[in-house]
Image (cartoon, rainbow, N blue to C red; front, top):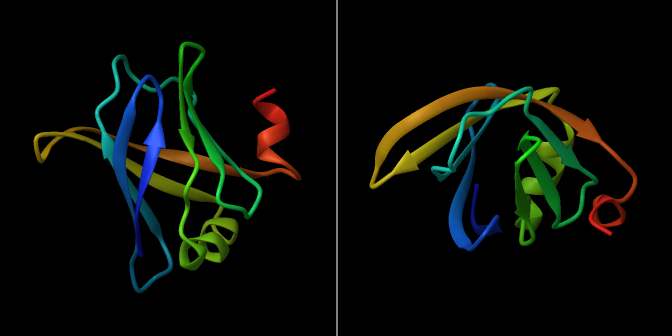
Length: 106
């Protein structure tokens, strides 16, 4: 579906994929520490936040237009964190739709 950039401490790549059932998978570079009650916060724009834990948030700032409606249409998505093409961890994340993701970053 898309190949974009995300930020935490530095730029990294991520992919957003959708299967025939409409389920969404986001593949991103491994982050330090595990995910504790993760939440994907989205407003339908090019921006999103993935809260992994109190200490770790991934900022998405270039979500492709073709991925926006599918992301707004699912109650949860699957995250896969990789390191050198090896899967390090996988987890499901609830999707929460908000009015303005950028206002949450101020």
